[in-house]
Image (tube, rainbow, N blue to C red):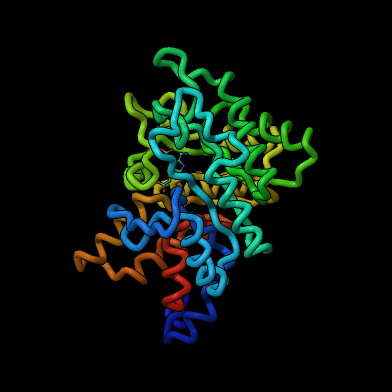
Length: 321
Ligand code: PBG
């Protein structure tokens, strides 16, 4: 008989045998930025998360940085009157996100800033690519996505993170960054599934499509090998980091991809629905919040994620987990 219970006799022994430990430097913390001043808008569907105007964001970042979180991901929440068919606001060098990046870099020069590069935040139809009638036109979306990445990079973003799931988007971004000799790296949302777990985000970012769904560009979760193929294609196109999104329902994809491409940093996105379910489950007294998050995030790292995007990052560190 093998005596496994010797590894579990008390807390100190269990700690010694723990293979996976999470720390602040594993996290990328998302922020929603709005125009204006003095704005802190709590997001109902994401308890504990708010949209901030740039001035208030800088104040919130004080705490984030003090907690040891050194990577953030920015989403722009754009007012409806600035949205159009072509997502013009997205590639304005003075866009909300560009202004936010410049302000943050000035105050926190070592903080690593990731920006979401997609058309859905900026287009009046709310789809991630350009429309030709009701069809998404993959190839004409590429130069616009590249232009969004370019203005973010010129503003000082450390990483641009294309999330539109257009074929060829990594090559388009890499090419424009190279032409302009910018050091900005690319975090590809490589295996991004058409998921039921994005609901709260769409409320937070005001980026829901106003007709149809995203199933013609985001991945079908019934596929098995395609996620790995998507990741491989992005690596061939030159991405620096890759991502699997959502995280918890896709641990198999994280693990397979990490084992196949161990040299490429793997990011997993614990998305808004995963966060909201745990938060609401805890509020209803069904689950211990801290332990629930600790277990989920540990599982994501155990599967092979090197970095985790999570709305829980600040709470995690604050609570000393
Ligand atoms: C789209 C984008 C989405 C999320 C991140 N970027 C929404 C979508 O693809 O429908 C979702 C993140 C989350 O749910 O936390 N640019």
